[in-house]
Amino acid sequence: MDRGRDWGDNCHGLPGEVMMLIALTRPVSPSIVRCELTHLERQPIDLDLARAQHTEYEACLARLGCKVQRLPVALDLPDSVFVEDIAIVLDEIAVITRPGAASRRPEIPAVAGALEAYRRLLHIEAPGTLDGGDVLRIGRVLYVGLSGRSNTAGVEQLRCLVEPFGYRVEGIMVSGCLHLKSAVTQVAEGTLLLNPEWVSPKRFGEMKIIAVDPTEPHAANALLLDRIAILSAAYPATQKWLERKNIPFVVVDVSELAKAEGAVTCCSLICEVE
Ligand code: CIR
Image 1 (cartoon, rainbow, N blue to C red):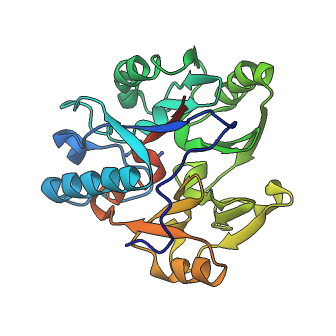
Image 2 (cartoon, rainbow, N blue to C red):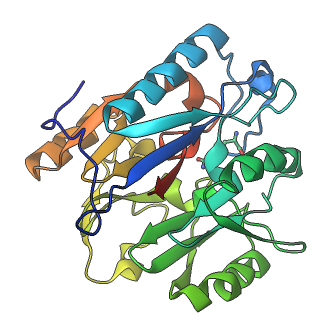
Image 3 (tube, helix red, strand yellow):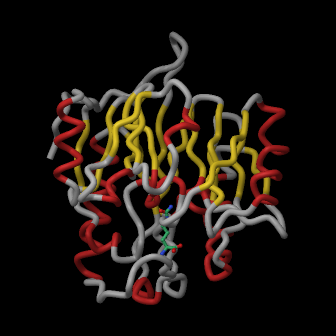
């Protein structure tokens, strides 16, 4: 369902410079039924439906102007569809993470192999842990969740890696959810969608805050592509709040991936290329 105008043209940058957005994705693995779970009880996952929803998610990315690049399926890596956790893609470099769940570290080679075509790669190393889902970029600031997955060593390593490129790193406490981006994401220029039960709005300075509807604690995860947000279809009450603020968005149904504790940001890595 598209609630915005036609946002297919995502070309921007300097005059004469044609930018393209690559969206790296990876298919749903049949082993997703053995995924990591932290805050949810295990429920049966309908694999065919999960795959269909993922394909529709990719189609949504394509409609919004991304060139979708699919990595090969990883039959024995249950959480490999959630590529976001494996890297932080910045304009100048990409940082390959060291995921907090050891089961997810074998996901790294395929993601790093694809990203090295577009960015110089830097790496988080032991004892640091960091999940991409904990890193929210707003301009030149990287807000990094101190969650069950990302530790202070990981945050400090990230700081050392990115400060030379002009980024500031701000560690942020999160509780009650998996990642920082379960609790807060950007939905428009200068505007965050946030669950105040899981992260304090005070850390985000002058940004406007829209709170999730209290009946929808998981609604804060949105993927902002250029000027339009992709949201999970499961949270209509929160979407009414966004409509009232004239925030443009589209929705996709990711109900089966949500049973694996995933949402919309986690299924792609967005990489701007010339
Ligand atoms: C995990 O626990 O690692 C996966 N089952 C879910 C990861 C979701 N990732 C994300 O939101 N960035």
